Image 1 (tube, rainbow, N blue to C red):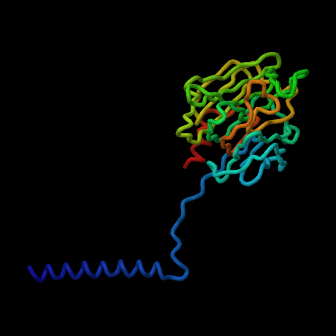
Image 2 (image 1 turned 90 degrees about the horizontal axis):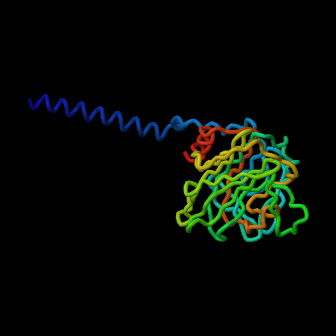
Image 3 (image 1 turned 90 degrees about the vertical axis):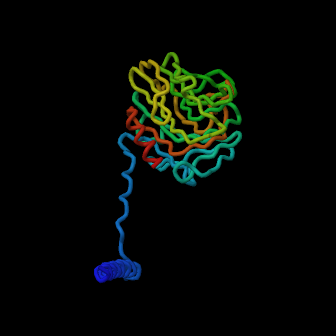
Length: 270
């Protein structure tokens, strides 16, 4: 019995020695052992994409290779993906729609990551709108075309809303408390406005929080997009510069589905 136990112990020691030797050979071999890496994530689809601004140390649209115009002193900060736009008082970007590779159509998706700063307690976020003819520069509020994505105080939280013009009137996307963000936690949230012929939708992190009937969005008189403020076309109600962070701003000339929006959320979160 003792002899058999000794043989078992000898076999075990021999096997362990071979394993350890193999490990050290892997560490010392030249070239080193090439362990397989995880395949890279597939990129987000560019199908129908008109505009893409990463905010990675510049304010350039990757689709047109055109730079946004800068008002004030916005900056950069750590983003959801690399760097992000960092808002500042009296600061924002404007981008000429004529610099996009194609005109905006009746089906559009605007999506971006957003990390709210609740001071000031209301602000414009992304705005495409026309001039209010005859109104002073500080009372611009023509909502009959384009869209306005903005935030307002709601019992200490920040409620994200949108407004869309159909050429003669405007409609609202107000999801109530479903569209609230707690600024004391201030997580990154993915905001998406989807416009179609017949309906408008607003999503947060791929979940629908508001919808409204929309015959068709009008782009009449819309020539610029504001990023980080309601200025200069949506300022009458005090939706001015936003001190929040904005990242990975994309505009598509098509209506993304909820599942497609969720794919973007998952891609940038994993």
